[in-house]
Length: 390
Image 1 (tube, rainbow, N blue to C red):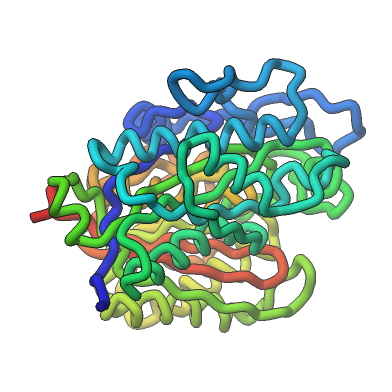
Image 2 (spheres, rainbow, N blue to C red):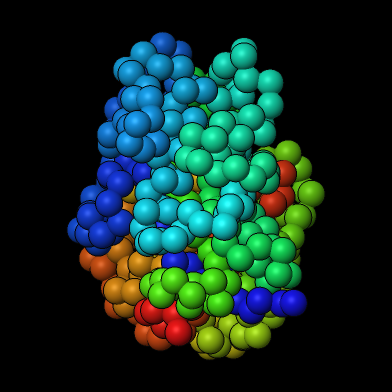
């Protein structure tokens, strides 16, 4: 039995600007950024990073306390993930933990590069599931910067197929020495500021964070009278396999991923009201993304574009889920925050993008686009929810 489009009934995030959904959104609207100096024992191109505004606590009452100041990346990844999952389930309301929900969790590398005891990109998800009382073995995935978005895509498929009624899905990644050093040596780290979609773009700045969303079938949500923030109408992905880090400069596969998400949603580009761009601030990614969006807008329809990495840093495997939450909140509030540090948008974009002040948006579908290393491109098509499922 096919269960229809999944509803988003709960959300939580952990960011460099804090953890409250509305409190962080208000700071984004105000143009704030959580990117700040984070000292490193290594010589980096830049010590600016989006470290968490507050350390994650334990996952709930009666649980072990959160990691202390000297905790390693494995402990921080586990605590960050468990805390954010627990808050997403709490946000979904009474009954959200009933019926043994699924967990689909994505990360880029988690603690794998820095912790010699980390031998698996699955164990962190299993540990977080146990910490939050989820008995079912989780699904863990790693598709670079598209991991969080792909977790939502997989969750939507589980619900649509009838295999699951309720899925907690999202991504998490912690800031570590190896990740910062790697991006510094690759030359993808900005020596100045993360200026997404700007003519002055010169690289990204890393961050850490997590976001998890509770997706469930309309029937399951109706039975417990759950609120529906949004509907995940469609999802699409592609891979250009152009190289380990550089995307295909043509943008063909980015356009393909967006087209697949819209087709999956039964929608057209003309139905899109807002786009959350990947907006990493690197020259290669921003060029291909703005070129792709500009091609889609050639017919004359020009939805508003925004991006959040200047506020959060690039949170790698968490970014797709964090940006999905941002799109849901944009649809809820009918406006988007300014793109941090944006002064002169890239001409190829050819779409309205707010600089210096928030902007209102019209009705329609919200797109969230992620472009990961290895050519992973994922797009999510979201629609404002009906309030409470009936």
